[in-house]
Amino acid sequence: MLKLYYAAGTCALASHIALEEAGAEFETVRVGFRSNEQRKPEYLAINPKGRVPALVTEQGVLTETPALLIYIAQAFPRAGLAPLGDAFALARVQAFNSYLCSTVHVAHAHRMRGYRWADDPAAIEGMQRKVPQSVGECFELIEREMFAGPWVLGMTYTVCDPYLFTLARFLEGDGVDPARFPKVLDFRKRMAERPAVKRALADEESGDG
Image (cartoon, rainbow, N blue to C red; front, side, top):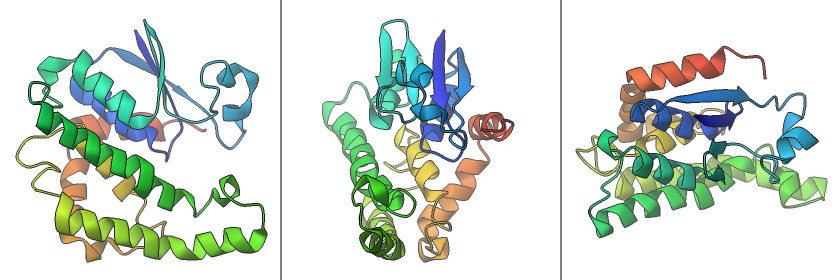
């Protein structure tokens, strides 16, 4: 059985939702960030990066959200979570999720994890002040150029959707008014009504981590 290591309020939610959408049999293990469990030997033996998500499969451990999402789509093809038979369309899925991973999530992380990039307190404060602008600019691009509607890539729901939903939930905390992005805001509301999303959120909100 698959085992997903996650922490509440993190990008691990995207993979959690995808597993629910796929109808996969899996169990979840909460990693308590408040107690720094992600840096303890027990978890580092699973994911030496000390981050979430991590997905334990029969073949080994997978990390990084885009990798987990495409694995879930390919491991459960009947769920139709990615256009597996169309090389160009599948590349578009990967391009969108790569942008979320490499640019949007990094901009968001500058708010509370600036220590990853700088030691100078003034530099860290400068990164924090920049977050509303940098995250806002990312979502302006998504709203204007990248979001096809009603789902990320158009009429078909894909693994892009739980990932965008997860990062869009951080907007208020990043000092960005989601009302600036009516398409994304409407999408976020519709996503929250999906049964798979409700199950994943209920699971994650039930723990103490």
